[in-house]
Amino acid sequence: MSTLRDLVEEHTSLAPEDIEHLHRLAGDWQIVSDLSFADLLMWVPIADRGEFLCVAQVRPTTAPTAYQDDQVGRVSGGPEVAHLTIVRSQGRIWREGDPVWYGDMPARHEAIPVRRRGEAQVIAVVGRDTNLSTARTPAQLELNYLTTADDLAQMIADGTFPPPRHPGETTSAPRIGDGLVRLDASGKVTYASPNAQSAYRRLGLAAHLVGESLAEITGRLVDDPLEGKDATDRVHSALRGDAPARKELEARGATVLMRALPLMPAGVPIGALVLVRDITEVRRRDRQLMTKDATIREIHHRVKNNLQTVAALLRLQARRVGVPAARHALEESVRRVASIALVHETLSMSASDTADEAVEFDGIVDRVAAAAVEVGASDFTVALRREGDFGVLPAEIATPLVMVLNELLQNAVEHAFEPPSSASPEVVVSVHRFRKQLHVTVADNGRGLPDGFDLDSSERLGLQIVRTLATGELRGTIELRTRAEGGTEAVMVVPLAKR
Image (spheres, rainbow, N blue to C red):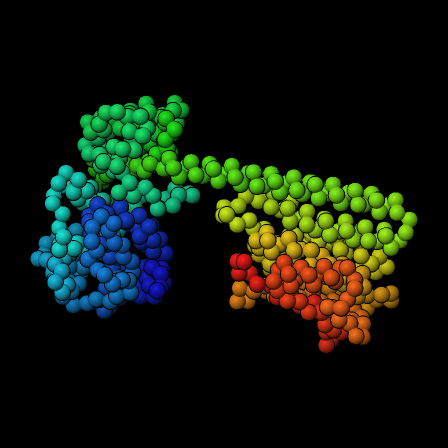
């Protein structure tokens, strides 16, 4: 399905700032839908056709929907959109008209003009369509919801809703069902939903909210006096017609998220709408995850330190060994341990937002490659480059994969070339993802494989490590072969699906 922006740009000539306003409205209009107990459909006129196109839709969470099928992308014309045409031409909210029937379901149509703040032009029309088959009894909650919905509808027509979005804020919470408080122009509570009353009881309020000054009560309840004053100022700011950023209130071990919206139909501040949500358990789990994440990162840091200590001891031992073959074997062990330590070092410096630990692998490969070139052939310089991106890999793949690449790169740098070397000795690591698999190639332009070479029967420790890790730990395949244009390439395929 095309996005709102795609549909508007394809079928209308609206300016970018108009489209951005429609985007913000679609991001915040769930509030209006829930308060109205109605579906909201955003209609834009199709130039010179007398028709309207639905570019966005939201269903209420407080009542049955009027449309079982998605209406986005639907084009309507003729008598069906007469009320939309009136709203567009007259620039007013349309509420007249008899109920219409969809099969055996009666529905009431209303329509709201959409403007940007300070502009007279109607850039779209919001249809407010209510399913009347299960009409709610007009009790106190329903009456307060509908009254507030009408105020917000007028603000949509005025261009003052939605309010500007603050940096970093999302539009997912709190919602109407989480808790709603209606304030009059003086800041006194005229209505508080049961969930809102419960949220304030968690903060320590024993009395009822209705009739109280919400700003004073909130400032008095919050543990930190400075935070309490900030919360009070935000309520007052909404009463003056501004839309302050959301605020988390903490008191008595409870945490409540508060959002204050001004109510100013026709540009006249008449009060504020305050949405509250009890997020105590959410924040408790967040703290647990942060503690767990810090503990895991500390463990990786200590493992990295221990591996570096082991590498240092092996390096020290290598310097004291007089037998060249033994010294070379110890130096190879140093490099293998150091490559594993790189993975743990990366994990220790990255905070994971998920249960699966993952690392940015490209930086690790580049460091291993640089180390291979540095300790490799000294009689000539080998150029080493990477093509493609490994991206983020889970730790269970990253650890064995870095050891395999370390062995392949070390082997290519040390054994693929011999003085006098080729004009431009080069080793290339190529990688791409295909069908949940990682395809990796390490290729050089050196002398190629010796006659009769067989990876499975090779007795070299490095190649045995490569074969064991590639087919065992990584559950993949690996092949070493001579390139047609000269040199050697190791081709490896690693599945990325969870084990």
